Structures are given as structure tokens and as C-alpha cells.
Length: 297
Image (cartoon, rainbow, N blue to C red; front, top):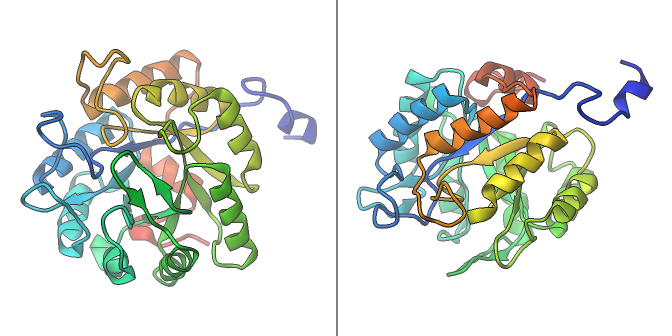
């Protein structure tokens, strides 16, 4: 492909295959909010298989304890990872190191110590502090760097969680320091009330600001999910989708969604614009991942 081809807009130049990242549980929704949210280990594993068959290749996993409370317990994560791998061996598994409820490095990094067959491929790394509706997610520069260094030591790829352009600047600083290394990939999350708005302008500015060779996916919070996912499809990015970000199928909030419903709709839309959906194995190749989180380079 020559330089002229590379500079041409989609779909004149071929789209990369669409990577679908399924955020199936999250830390907030309960069975009182929706009966479709998978909370137990068995439910998360079963739902992951359903989503895998629908077209998802990455699973952004949050663990819950037996009472449905968010947990950083690596033993719970190990059971989830083992169960998903047994049924979807090519699936890419990303675990959470969120600072939304846990504040200590030891607790947040505990899941990064998993190894062997239950070693995660990726781990979330939020690149700054932000406010949610009910509480803050605190991510100091020191915490971000310590988590990133440990991910490097464990050969776990950071999934960068980006809620505004300042967090993109943080990524660039960490790249310059050599703390973040390729592959650069992550989610642009728009529509949360205290961060970047879910507009095409905001998404375009964020994408334009990303470091070179960054594999990005767009997510919209709540009723913005579908619009941001469609924008990402047209712009050549990936999509993050699931009940973690949005429990409804419609913007009027009259119809509760399942993860499978949300994914199947995105697959249909992507197929309509003639953009192929990546298999899990193809997504691994695009990210430079082999099995169990070991990078290929």
C-alpha cells in the first residue's frame, strides 16, 4: 500500500477488522437494576461464552464477591479467567485495577500476580482521576506509574482507560518515560457527566490526539453508547460495549438489554457498512498477543 492509499479516508482504504470489547459486568449495576447483569462467577463465564459467540473478542472483567460487591480478590478472578478460557480459549481477557473502590496499590495490583493458565492478557489502567455520579476514582501519577510498571514486569498489556484529553497527555508522558510500551491500546470513554462529552467533535479530537499506532475503541456511557459505537465503526476504531456502561437497549430506557443483544446489534451495523468483525484470534494478532498474556514481540 503506498502513501496515497494510506491517507485516503475509509472506506476508500480498507477498514481494519472491528474488535469488540465486551464490558459485561462493571462495578455498579445490581440485580435490582437489571436481572441480566452477570454477577456470580458462573454467570460471568456463561455470559462471556454467549458474547464470544455473538462476536466479542475482548472481555473487560470485573469480579464480584458472593454478595455481589465489587472485589479485587485474585482468587475470584482466577476462577473467572479459568472458566472463560476453558470455553473460549482464544478470548482476550482484561482484568480491572480500578481505583473506584480500592485505594491501596496492593489491593489494586493483586490480580496482576495471577500466572500460568489464569494469567490475564490485559489489565485496565485509568490514566487520571475523575468523578463519577456517586464517587471519585482516584488515580495519582504515582499509582498509575506503579501499576504500569508491574504490568510490564508481568508481561500484561495495559488497557488504557481514557475519559478526557488530559489522560491522553498522561499516556504520552508515560510513553516518553518508557513506562508504557507497545502495543498501545485502550478505550475512549465519553458521556460520563463529569468528563468528555459524547459528541463527534470530542471523539474526533481525542482520536486525533492519540499517539501513533494506538489501537482505540470508543464507548458511550448510558444512552450515548450506541452513537459512540457507531461513530467508532465509521472512524475505523473498535467498540467497547456492554452492561457495564449501559443497561438499556433504547435511549428512552424502556427496554432492558442483555450483553448479547447489544453485541449482536453492533455486529449487524458493522456488517451493513461492510466492515468485518475480528475473531478473537484475529484480535490477538492485531494486538500482538499470544495465549495467556505473553506478548509476541
